[in-house]
Image (cartoon, rainbow, N blue to C red; front, side, top):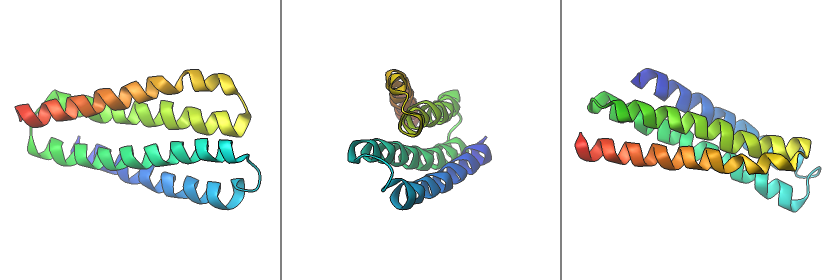
Length: 122
């Protein structure tokens, strides 16, 4: 499982870099300042949690706890829902997607809590 989370983390970090470049070079002239900031928030949280997946991989190789694996999957869900909804909101103009963004934020929070719990119990 540690290889899966490390691989996902590395891949999602690479995608975050690509999306950041896309935003900085192509979207800068096409989006409002507000929408560009929303897009950049998605990229930033994707990068944070891609790196967190690498931490999960390290923790999974060190401690045996199912909570660590759940934390990793919650980070993946958080990236897809939180960052994905922000990207889609900005690129399609579908503002209702902002209503599901907090679900991704809750997944991030739950992932951090489980990772913390695993460290204290590990």
